[in-house]
Length: 294
Image (cartoon, rainbow, N blue to C red; front, top):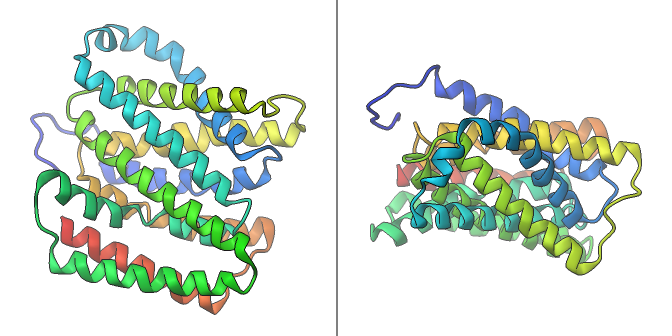
């Protein structure tokens, strides 16, 4: 349902969500192709995206950013923090578990949106949301049981992906509140920029390598920044002005489908029945929780 606004969108926001799904689906593939430490991959993703957007932001929204209230600026920085945590945990998960598992679990964020929104607004969880929570626990247990056979590393990867999902939900909820007041470019340059500063600081503190990678890895960095981040995430952030956070989160469910298809083509990764059943239950849980929250 479109949120009431005094002005109207220049085009159908659904097109932005579809574009976002297609673009974000490439993120796991680019991350898997990049032969670099996970934190370095995440730092390059938001860092390059911020550098690409910086000249336009300086030209277009410099005055808007300078005139922001302290609270709005702090919330935008906090959104960037959760974005940085989302990328660092999710990309790290790809080193331990499959693309399919990682993307399905990281996209449980509509479930966390459904849980966190009532806590913030003091609303009660609907029966539909409660059913979704039960289904998600069962689905996660099935996926975890399947990974346990292959070793503890896969379980650790699943946990990191789930943690990344919670951070993504917080990033999405903060973005929903801020996009009502801020222009798209002003919001994303603060959010992406603060995430880049946090991630690059961690990279430098830990002494991780930042140069000397293959041309294919650098190409994956640019692909993640341009396609997955600027086109994908920015499409979602634009749509947050017109759609509720729950509805935008639901559309993220298209990412596991796209990423799994791409992983099959690029890496020949196949879904077992255990993953298929567990993933199906999680997706059903997300849909019910988000629907109940709407």
